[in-house]
Image (cartoon, rainbow, N blue to C red; front, top):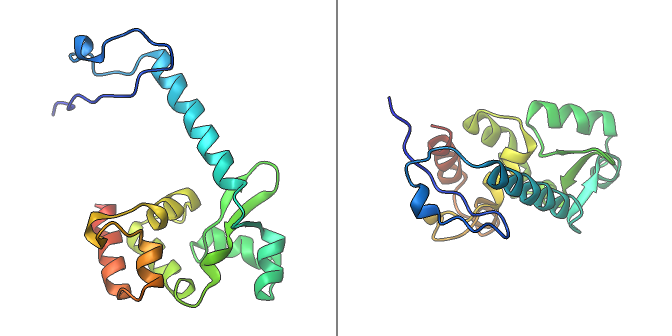
Length: 156
């Protein structure tokens, strides 16, 4: 089985013409470093966003303990992303009535309890939802079954 070629954005300041390297199937060290830096910046920005709360803040928000919140994160019952500064950060909107009951079945359909994968799925616009994110679609009353079917398809 052959691996299809892929293209990556050029590192800042790179003078390489990607078309001339179309037969190269691997990212250069500079491209890899640029992607890692961009990913780290994105993650830090997302962790610092106003809608993100710590495990302790989430526990206070819904009337439970941080131990319970951490167990729910591990089980895929809620979305929590690792933050070296604060343990876990969680999007506060997940505790809304239209989202909360869907999280555990969603994690099961996606086949993961990883917080970044769950968060990415919920916040990525989808053509199957007319450009809405699954989170927006749920908030606007799109049937849960449609979102779960999309998650199942995304997992395969």
